[in-house]
Image (cartoon, rainbow, N blue to C red; front, side, top):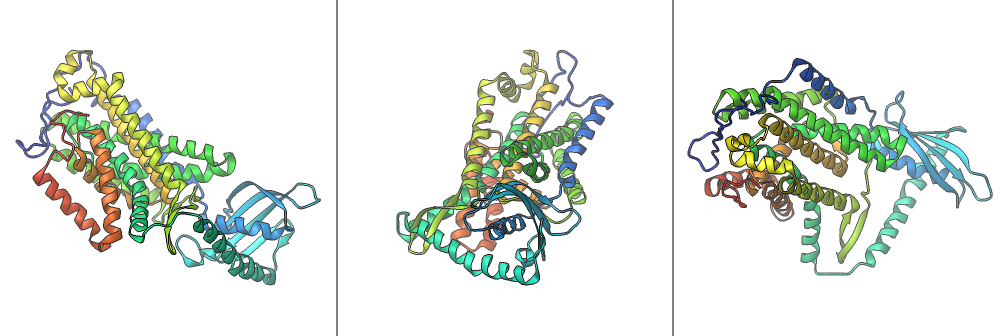
Amino acid sequence: MLVEHMALPGDGHPLTRQLTLPPSPSGRGSFSTRGAFNALRLAAALLFCLLLGACASIIEPDHLRVCRDVLPALHGEGSHIREIRYGPVTARKNTVRIDYLAREPGQPNLAHYATCGFAGGGTDAARFELIRLETERGPLSAVRLMILQRWWLGDARMTADAAARRRAQAAVPEIPMVFAYALQQGANGLAPAALYGLLASAYALVYGLIGRINLAFGEIAVAGAYAAVGIVAVAAAAFGLVPALILALCAGAVTAAATNLAIGRAVVAPIVGRRRSGQAVLVATVGLAVALSEALRLLHGSSARWSPPIASDPIALVRSGDFVTTVTFNQIGVVGFALIIALGLIWLLRRSAFGRSWRAFADDPGMAALFGVDPGRLVALTFALAGGVAGLAGFAHAVHFGSAHFALGTVFGLKALVAAILGGVGSVPGAFLGGLALGLAETAWSGYLPIEWRDPAVYIALVLLIVVRPNGLFDTNGRPA
């Protein structure tokens, strides 16, 4: 028996759900009773996934960009350069090496390498200061390095890049400033909105089925982000960017799915099987969130893990005088990815056998069990699916912002929960739309109102929403969607 009675705190409240679940007809597949061997195997696989990011040496994106900018200066004008691989130099701090092929005019294609050392890393301003450059011909002298810094990486290069940007921006249409600025805020808000929507969908998957909220989803997403960053750092040099992104996507989803499934088996199922109050699950998952956050800090360190920037060059859309509205392929890709995942979830819940079982169990657990739905298997699959979606949100966050940090989970998870409640926490489409609404509203507030009041306004709006419309803006009248 999974649970005798499920209800959110506060009987009689519109958010309260009471579900009676008889034993599984087959007598097998109970979500709360698993063999010790399976639990140990799952724990070992989870630990391996969490260690992926910790084992990887991370390349600072600014270091890699500056070192790439140096390569043309090492060869004659008109040389063709093709990068082979890049990676950190583990024996030296703040150092990156690039192996490449260069073909100078009238010369054969030859293999070369450049090792660039920098004065700082992370967010330190000294991360742009090149203090050492070595090639197969030996280290550059201090004089040549100074000339390279001053005239190639300094004013001349910046002036050329600025002139190229001005020429590209001059070709776009000109519109009034008020519309150009509003369009820029909309472009800035789409990617965070899509990320909120993805994580809110994970909340909706679990709550729509069993009426419980897992407050550790933010940390689960961060675990997926760490795994994704680690895979990108390791695999990009060996296989190229696209295969590395595919591997990172899979690693993030599997890591988060395993984490959430372990939480469901070890914590949620025993609690809901013994207690009728939902408060125990809330308190337990808050504790899990803190524990998982600290575990991530110990595994990966307190500093942010960085990955190379991906498709981050600005694309001019419109302009108003010197103000240019831009967007990046990274933003477009993150929004498109989130929409594809959301549409896939909606199709899965409405058209697949799993979705029919999910909706039947959410409507009437007892009747669904009588018609052959295995409660233990269904709840386990739902927890794994919700964890996978959270991991995909973490992967998309790492790709968009280029970093992962253990402290991200609390704010990310709480705001996604606000989005889920805003859209209707039992509805996957409603939760995703709630994420879009919250992300765009946050960006609009940041653009037009005092930014320091943005987060208080979000949580005050949550309190008012629960008082005035507790079922969310897209109320499904108790029906899961």
